[in-house]
Each structure stands twice: as C-alpha cells, then as structure tokens.
Length: 232
Ligand SMILES: *[C@@H]1O[C@H](CO)[C@@H](O)[C@H](O)[C@H]1NC(C)=O
Ligand SMILES: [Cu+2]
Image (cartoon, rainbow, N blue to C red; front, side, top):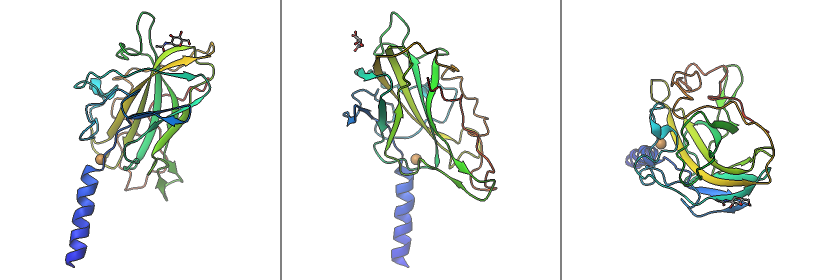
C-alpha cells in the first residue's frame, strides 16, 4: 500500500512538470543545438504553456526573453523539423505556420506581426464517430514537415504550436506550447501562400477544436484549429 501511494504521488508530480518546448531545428537531417535557430522562449526553464490566445505570446512566446536566433538556410521542397526537449506529453494537436519576412527586414529583426502566417503542416486527432479519440502526436519527439516547394525564396519565421487539450473544457484551458525558428529559403518558386492569419487573431479561444472536453462525451469528430494547410 505504501509503495502504491508513493508511486501515484510520483506520477502526479511528474505530470505537473511534464511540459515541453521545441528548442531545436532539424536542418538537412541534422538536429541543431537548442535555441540556435529557434528563438529562446519565455518558458525555456519552467516549460509552461501560453493559455491566452489573445496575448502577444501566442505568436512566438518571447515577450520576456526578446530572443533572436541565427537564421538557417534551407532549400524549398526539403524537409525540416522541430525537436522537442521532452517528447510531447499531453494529448493534443499540432500546427506549423510560416510567415515571410517583409522587405527591409530580416528574420532576426522581424517580430512576425500582421496577417502574414500560413499553415504548412498539421497533425490532428483521430476520431471514429464517438467510440474513441486518439492523438497521433503522443510521445512524438521530432516533428518533420516539408518547406513547400513553390514558396518564394527569402527569409521566414516558422512557428510550431502543440495545443494540449487535456484541460480544454473551460475557457483558456487549452495549453499552447510554441516556438519560432528563423529560416532563409533558397530555390523557391512563385507560389502565393494562404490563407493568411495573424497571431494573436487567428484564434478566438472558442473554436470547437480549442474549447472542448476530450473525455466525455468522446467527441464524434474533431475540427483542427486554424486555416487549411498551404501545400504549394
Ligand atoms: C539567404 O539566401 C540568399 C541566397 O543564397 C543569400 O543571398 C542571402 O544572403 C541569405 N540570407 C541570409 C540571412 O542567410
Ligand atoms: Cu504540461
């Protein structure tokens, strides 16, 4: 009995601290050092989430660090990725967005404001009409995705978000684990990425994929937050 009580106390403690960040970019198959190409986020120590979708931290979560990173060169059409410091722990879904740096700015000095972000990747929940809901991001340590082949060449911010939904049944309960990388795309095309959204602005917090109880009743379907993926 004593042993069981200790084990469950430990399980609760590890649940409380088991947050995560996405500090590393994968470029040409090589995982770069933490916070080299990714702007160091406010939560680099405590690793807690953003829960206010209307705050500026919903964009890159750098209001306290004001961090800049070094810009990685990547070819259009190639695969890049983010690596989590701890495999994704909470049940949830994932999106990756990009935003082109406006002329006159660099990825290192641009804040990503404006209606400029398009989605390039998503990993949603799997549902079957109400019997089960499963989470393909569970235990994922690396999130790979293609830089669309026809994206115009130039510098971009790349923003990953994992939306943890275990407490999403009440307002501001969903937890956003976010970071932004800086890349320079070479060999791009003449595509027109879209639809474009702003952060904050993309989410109201009331979306059926953000404000929901994932446990009971089991959702019949799941609607991924944000615009459709632009594939170039
Ligand atoms: C981005 O790539 C272009 C083309 O190779 C190069 O001219 C430019 O200097 C690069 N910029 C950065 C910040 O790496
Ligand atoms: Cu957590």
